[in-house]
Image (cartoon, rainbow, N blue to C red):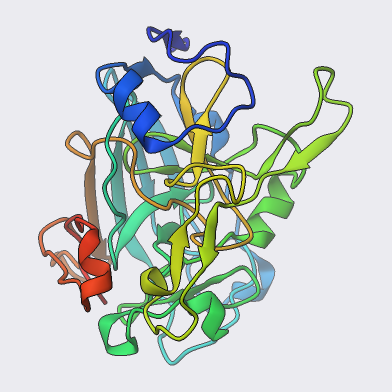
Amino acid sequence: MKTKVISPLLLALLGVSVGIATLATNAANDMTALACGASNFMKVTADPKNSAYPAPSLTVTCDSTNMVVKSNGIPNFEYVQTNPNRLQAQNYTWNIPLVPTTGSSRSVPLGGVSAVAANGIPIFGPTEAPNDGYKDPYEQGILDFCNGHPAQRGDYHFHASPTCLIDKLGATKPGTVIGYSLDGWPILTPYVCADASCSSTKKLRSSWQLTAPSQTAAWSRNSYVAGAGDLDKCNGRVQADGSYAYYATDTFPYFMGCYIGSLSNSTVVAAPVATSTPVASATATPVAPNANLNKFTFLPAVIR
């Protein structure tokens, strides 16, 4: 499927970061049909040090409306246990829209899947479970060397920029896709061309800042400060062709600061291999833990 751009959105603004208000005004009804992103996913193979676990599996196909990602959620890099939860194979299916939208501004879930990485591993938001006070697990130092760990059901996931995955994909190459948000927009490495010939690169910075260090919950500790970095509130920006992309940044929120697109056309199915009972689906709604977080409209997600 060839990329078909049907939006003239900000075509002249190469390299310019824009805010949510601008996008909402100029792009609420604009849509860009993306090419099938199957080629951006990795051919996963078992790490020899993971002999105690099943081999990773990942297939990606596209139909006329969705990119369909199926994965068993087993890492293709050495798994190092950092918490009491034992790694287990899953049965994931993500239907990710090929025609994502822009103009929305809604929060990522407090728990559960918000995106999928190029190796078939789920990406969660920058918060731990409610019993941990919705803290930032990266700040807590409870992630492994690739910034992930398994939840109670053994489902391994990333919370922060997956350094080992980025290294495998080519860390400094501009435009490298490391995953897809469930709203359809890609997540790129934070490197972009610094000049027209791309003889040098620039590393983009998040505009979210630590503004309330005395707070416990990650979304209360950090605030979006326009102009403090290179990216908008959702941790992304408009590309040269008018499409949008998020960036995996070194600092909070690491992936998406919010969703800029609708999830109405996306589907998430996830269940352990050993049972037919779903373990992660868009059915339960988390409750904001304090007044500071009530400014967000939380998307359906399962907290665990």
